[in-house]
Image 1 (tube, one colour):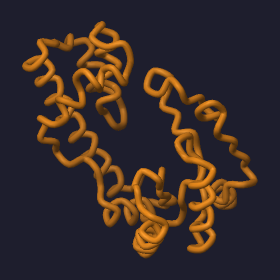
Image 2: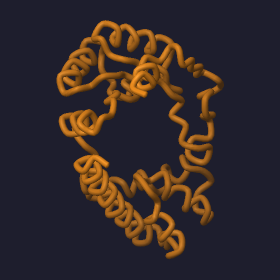
Image 3: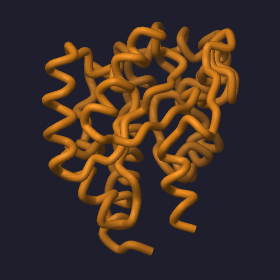
Image 4: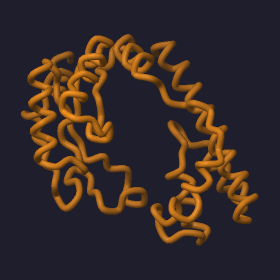
Length: 204
C-alpha cells in the first residue's frame, strides 16, 4: 500500500513493456520473426517485470530457438545492442531508501556479480549501509564456498544480516537450477543460519 513504492514499480513496469515492444519490432525487422498477437498479449499482460527471458520462451515455442540460451545467442544479445532502452532499473541511492521507507529489508543480491575485490566490495557495502542496506546475500547457486565465506566475513564485520537462495527462475529459464537445491545440490539453506529470516519472523 506504500504509494511511492507502487508508483516506482508502475513506472518500471511501463518501461519494461516499452523496451520489450522495441525487441519485438527489431526481431521482425532484422530476422523476419513475427510474434503472433496472442503471444504478444500474453507477454504484455504479465504481472511484474517483463524482459528477454519471457520473450525467449516465446521464441522457443515458435520453434526459433532450442532453449533460453539459444534464443539469447541467436537473437536477443544482438538485438539488445540496437535497443535504446528506457531506464527501468533504480540506482542504489533510489532503491535502498525506497525499500526501507516501505517497511522492507534492503538486501544486496548476488554480490559476486559486482566483480569487486574484497576491499572494493567492503567500500561499496559501507556506502549502501549508509543509505539503509541491512542485509547481504551469502548463499547462491553461482557462489563458491570461498566467496560465501568472504561475504559472511564482511556481513559480520559490517553488522549486516545474511540471506540466501537458489535464484530459481523455473526450469524453462534456468534448467540446471532446482528450487531449494541449487545447481547439482550446491545449495543447502537452514532457517537457523539466516539472520534475515529470524529478523522478519520477529516482527510478527
